Length: 175
Image 1 (cartoon, rainbow, N blue to C red):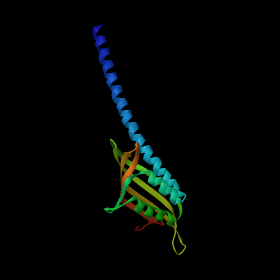
Image 2: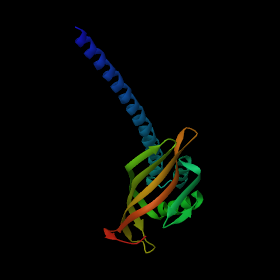
Image 3: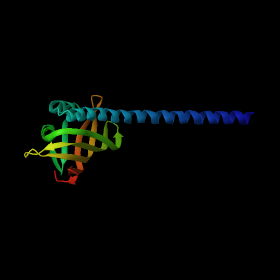
Image 4: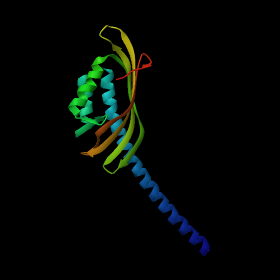
């Protein structure tokens, strides 16, 4: 009988350790899920405003989701929030209609109160040239984003542009 009791206590100890490990993993997973859901929710607000061609709404959504020292990097050149938003809203204004705007995480790694994400952003629509001709636009961009927890909320601190694909009427074009 003693060997059975010994196995029971050994087994019980393993179960307790395993449940502790699983609970720690699930807590870490929840934290990661909070980061993903917060960033995704903020981005969806901006995408919705862009589709409605609501420049003020897009700017408000973006401003609420970035740090006060936000930096946008493209080709090694930094832009502050004001410059970034000016360029972004100009692209919305150029569009006759935004038919879709979406994003997805390629990867996401959290490091305490900071995190790094690799994101793909996509936008499709119709643009009217000065000569009044309409052209289908399809843009996809890869970005590396750095997030920081500020006041209990995840915010984007740095957004670095990577490879971008821009199609006009299905043909590659330069931006």
